[in-house]
Image 1 (tube, rainbow, N blue to C red):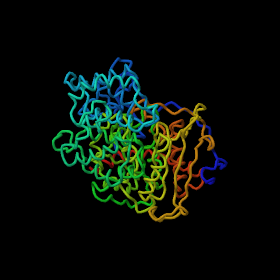
Image 2: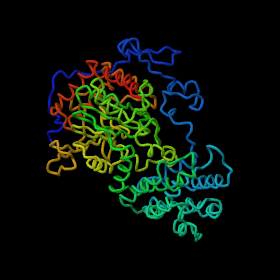
Image 3: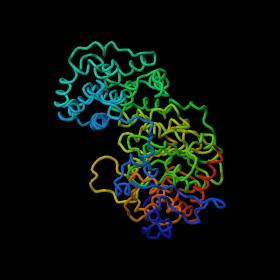
Image 4: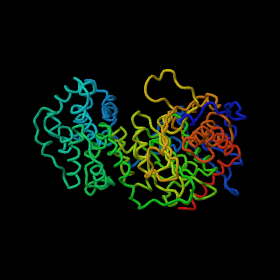
Length: 588
C-alpha cells in the first residue's frame, strides 16, 4: 500500500497558489442575478446567467426570514411547501433521543415535561397545523424511548426526569393516543407500568401492517432482522401514498418507528444490504453505457450546510480525460437540508428530471461524459419517504444505503466513491460496493461527511475517530468483475491524505453557508482558472480519486494532479459543464 499516495513523489512546476477574488463575476448593489463574462456563453447568443436571489447574509441584513421570500439561492428554500411541518418541540427532543447507544442524551425533567405535555395537547386536538405532532414523530419518539429502556446501556436509558414525566402523563396519554402509538411505546405492556393489553394484542390494520408489526417487536427489543425480511417489508410498504392514507397500507407511525429503530440498533450488514438493493429492479435492469470507465459518486443526499461542495465540478474535470462520472441525489433532503448537486444544476438551468437512460446518453456523449440522476426519477419508492424522513429527525438506514446505487452500468471498469462521517460505517459501505460488483471502491471522510477532501491543516484538537481526509478502499488487479474477485487479487488500502505532501498550500475551506449561488460562484470561478482554495480542492479531489481507484494514467500522483489542472486551465472542464446544461434539455 506504500505505493499509493507516496508523499516523496515529486512533480515539476508546482507553483504557490494564492487566493484571488472572483473578478469575473460582478454584482451591483440592486442586482439579484450574477453576470458572467463572454467566455461563459453556450453556443451563439445563448448567455448562461445563473439566477441568483438574496443570499442568507443579505436576508439577515434586511430582517427577512425564509417565510418572507422564497429564495432559490438558499438551500432551505428548496424544501417543498407541500410537506407538513414537524412540531419543533418534539423534533428537538428527537435530536437528543433518536440516536445511538452512546450518543443519546436523555431529557431533563423540564424538557421531558414539556415534550409529554405537547404530545398530550396535540393528541387532544388542542394543537393545529405546524404545531400538531405528526404520527411519524410520535412513532420515532416512542420507538426511541422503548429501545432505550429495552436495550441501551444505563447511561443512555431513561433519566429520572423522563421517568417522572412518563409516570405523570402516561395515564392520560393512554386514553387519547391511537393503538399503534401505544403499541410502539409499550409493545409488551410492561414498560409504562399500567399493564395495558393494547401493546401485546396489537397486530395492525391490514396484512402489510401485520408483517411490519411483527418485525417491529424484534426491533423495539433491540434485535435485528434478516435480509429477506427487511427487503420484503420495504417492498410491501413503499411507495408511501401520503395523499391517500387509506390505500398506503401502512401507518406512518409504524414505518418511522421501524426506520429509526433499525438505525438506533446499528444495522447489520445484511440489513444494510436489504436497504441498498430492495428497489434495484423498480425501473427494470439499468442501462449499460458504452464507456471504458465509470465512477458512481455517493454524496450524502442531505447536502452541505457550511462548506464548498466540489463533486459536480470534479466530475466535469475527470470527464475531460475519459473518466466518466455518474452523480445521484435529490433536490432537498432532511435532516440537513443543505446544498445538493441537483440544486446547483437546477440553479444553472440544467434539466434535472433525467432518467437513467438519459444519463447513459450523456455519459456516452463525447462533449459531456458525466451525468446526474435524481432519486425522484430512479427510485420513486424511496423518494416518497422524504416527508417521513424529516419527521423522524435523524438519518435512517437509507441515508447510508442510497449512496451506493448503480443507476447505470458500464461496459468498461466501474468504481464507486462514497462519503461518510460516523466511524463504523466505512466498512459497511465498502461491503455494499463489493456487492455491487465494481472493480474499485473508495470511502472518504470529507468535510461534513461529504466527499470533498480539504487542503486545510488538521485540527490539533482531534483526539478520537478518523480525521477528515481519511480514505479506505479496494481496487481489483484485473478486469474481472468484483463478484469473481478473491482477496488475493483485490488490493485493500486505508490512509490519511495530507494535501501539503503533494504541494498544496494549506487554506481554510471556502464557506458557503447554504448559499447555492455562492457554491456555484466558487466552482465556476475555479473552472475558469481562478487559483485559490476552490481550485485546489477540485484538483486534489480529482487527482487523488483517480490515483486511489487505479485509473489509467494516474499511477503517478503527480501526473494525476497535473492532468486535472490541465483539464481546468485549458477550459475543457468548464466547457463540459456548459455542454451538460445545454444538452440535458434535448433529452427531455
